[in-house]
Image (cartoon, rainbow, N blue to C red; front, side, top):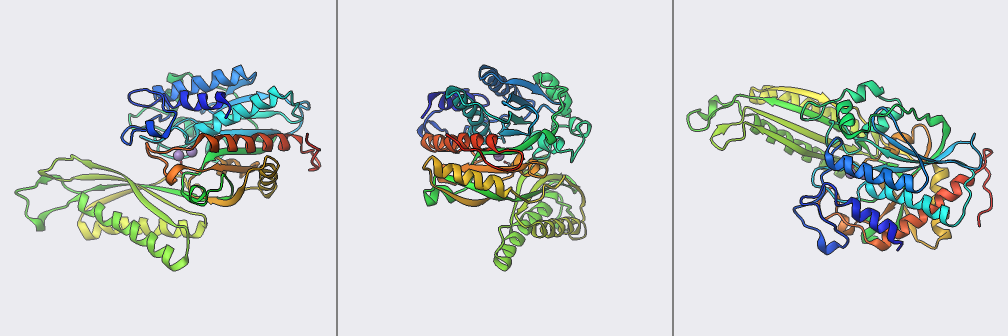
Length: 430
Ligand code: GLV
Ligand code: MN
Ligand code: MN
């Protein structure tokens, strides 16, 4: 494959790894040590700087908006037609992999470089985008930058959100040097396409190199704090306890059991996870007085996601009666399931065929900024296989041949989309 893209994905995988080091083959992965690049961290700042440098080298005009979303524009032969936007995110989960998000950003830059190298004149402008805070690992909700970009949350509200240290997003962006004032008007964007690793086992198991996403699952996050009474583990009789962790254990089992029951009863793709747990004060000889939980509920069918969310909220409240604790519930903004645009799906499928790469249609269980952008702009997603279906973990990997397949399909797709006329007709491609 083209070394530039491999180099970008390897060099950027250096940032947020402890200790910082290059990983360019699967065998160099360390199951304990992935990448950690939450928004506002120095690792996030470094990978942003790396990407911006590459964008500028590719001749793009770089601008930053009020929530730190980065845009890189390549003008088209025509200026007053909707742009083709393409990109992903550079933040990561805690101890995640180097391809989640970053692959989509560097592949978009590579696609522009390849079009430039072949002297291709894009009719529509191309906008590369890096979304802020896709993972929610710092500011408490996923898809933060794109949620502000589509106007579902105001820029001010997004910038005022606080991370675990109490720092606002605005302060975090100022620290990194990415608090801008550019305003991207999505009415000037005709199409959006995001290349991403699948993060699940389907393509890898089926040995199909490219997936084309039809629907993206919705995500509902519930934060709950269970307040019991911290007390001595040796002296407090069993009948006199208000153990917050015992109550939390009840809800953890409830989420798993109900999601499983929905799958069995409805044949649905429902998933429910308690992925975050903080126990206070966290001492072996102390009855836990307070527990914080982060609960993640998803489905491609809105009603299923909503019904599990309601049930879990009710079960959380019921802990008060059962365990004598008090429970505070904070529902984060829900991202609803989103179908992607048939027009873009068709173009991706056609493009994959034209570069002789096999593809299949599928759904995405992972969340993506695409599901926000799809509310305003015709959007499509290209998936490439994740080895063993592993992601959000240090062993996340995608083979370089698959990266190359993905970028070929992406480049061809961008080429096609930039040639679609305002009346929807397609021009002949070389
Ligand atoms: C984002 O990667 C998510 O699916 O949580
Ligand atoms: Mn991602
Ligand atoms: Mn992710």
